[in-house]
Image 1 (cartoon, rainbow, N blue to C red):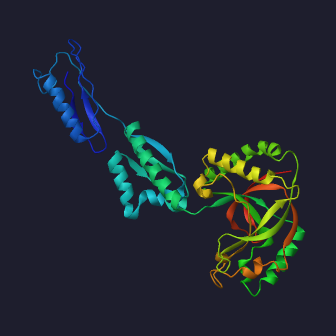
Image 2 (image 1 turned 30 degrees about the vertical axis):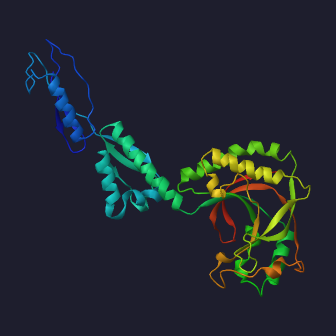
Image 3 (image 1 turned 45 degrees about the horizontal axis):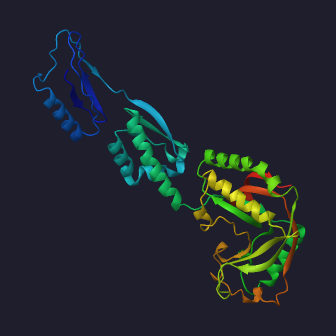
Length: 347
């Protein structure tokens, strides 16, 4: 039997000869490119030099066998479609040429988290999927976090102290660079979520972690105090971030254990990696009070020496109960509160 190939734009049609009277041993092969196909066909021809170039077997039934077009969907957040299309569609065209597929990418306003793909076989679809995943992964690393998991720090006593702190800092920093009481929190981890399905998955992961909490906290509430002003760098005269620490009243490590185990769980589930936590498996628990990047008014850094002095009036901001674990968006609502997605109780 002779196999002849006819190249198409996205695949190859094959003429399979199926003699009914006599049969010969057939060597199977697979073509992945025009050049390779020619080489394999040439090798095949050398084995059966006595065969004619066309099918002339008696009583044979030669029928063209085509690989029909199939349609599939690749799940891809709509946010990353612009990277898959590229400038003037150059990336999309390259992907289609390399994989022998056709892609239908939804328009941005459609907000669809998938791409429709026409392909001849599973091999071409898998090849495209690998390339798309690489593009999305690379783009995701360059983007800023969209969500974060945190423990709110709130009480009437702390709110009153924060207003007093804002007054005391009046000559040092613009008031808008001092955190609002409604947004005080301890960050456990930051996430990059770009579709509803990714947000839903993060919520499910947090709910899956919830049953572990009573054992980590030994069934007792987290009562703490916000105190001890600290800075992120080693130069008090040039500070971007000033924060307070939360110290548990029972002086235990339960709060730190909760944060570290939650971080570990998030990493195990693929929602973040330790690189996003300064390559550390331990969470640096801090409650940011001042961040010079929050508002464009005023200097980019401040001299925090007076705030760190032993003579500074406000040392202890008050006590609170840390009662919940939140998954929030980075954005805030009209009440200057973070937009909440999921809440897990700690009590």
